[in-house]
Length: 420
Image 1 (cartoon, rainbow, N blue to C red):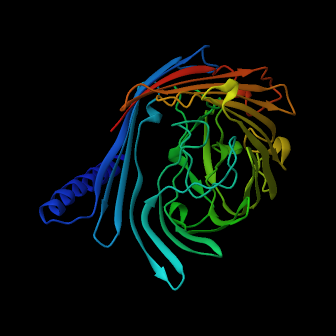
Image 2 (tube, one colour):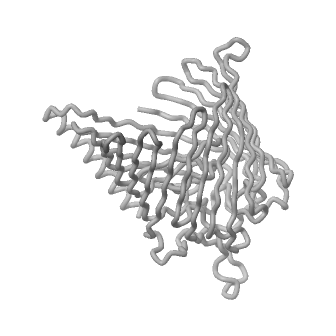
Image 3 (cartoon, one colour):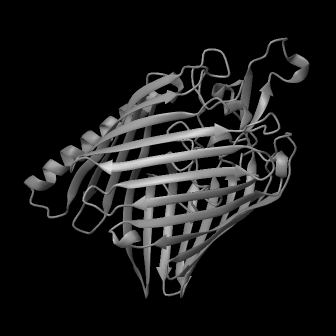
């Protein structure tokens, strides 16, 4: 499958370049662009791994290139391949098409329509710590465990907008299974997740047709989004394999299983001067909890963001974040945010190098677990930029089933990006 993607990506990019040259020769005025970034990464873990074969150092390289073509009628093609090679964990190696879609648009009376056909990325939500409503695309946890990096998803995406708001309809197929670290990787469970044994509740498996819809509008200072999804869950439940009655004495694998779920979501943001008040909430049915029992549940993230401009009469701005994440399943939740507080501060110097500092903490209200984070971003030149990140796990005890497996995975990383 990876070879197929690499071949398809190469052909699409090559076709885009050839088409660009042909258009120029024939005098077409529509724009054409190729841009992207190449990233060098190195990461050092402060402690030896909790499990055998885990490595304390990882390094690699990734590249993301976008080719954009537009004809004289405004129709466009966007192709964005992504490639990553990781020296420390072969499971992180990946070739993916983040985007490869045709965009068309027009008018219907006083309304505007837009249609995207192909592979695309869609982002829903307003909060900083963990977006609950964002469910269209699979999360690329291997790229970044913060759940904000998304893989490409084949879709038909139609949009109708007017004074009454924006309505988006989605038809999705070919489910993208989530990737997990291998035996050499960090930030993993004690047992290796065997993605080759992935199972689905739907008889159609990964080709099940998923449906989604979202309505958004603004009412004065309030932005609101209402969403619905019916289809294959993006978050797997991890089952021991083989079943208990067939299990050998030393079994070492977990198998991802994806159920069919229905989810209704709400995301809203209220702006009042330098304050932003945010809420994301979902109700999901059909999913299994950490005890492998089906349980309908509701969850929410609520919080506020406040910006202090020109601190100490300088050009710098300080933004403060506070959010509370709650999952109705409590300790039966399949994520680490069942009852947690997120606090963060971001300082932007607003200088010519876009220098930025971020510090954060996630504190469990049910245990003593804490996760500290720090980030530094700065442009070195017009093409080069630097990112330094660090994370630390503190006071993680055995009573925290989701953070305890990664208790020794505090680390620091350096990324050097070249953009063109």
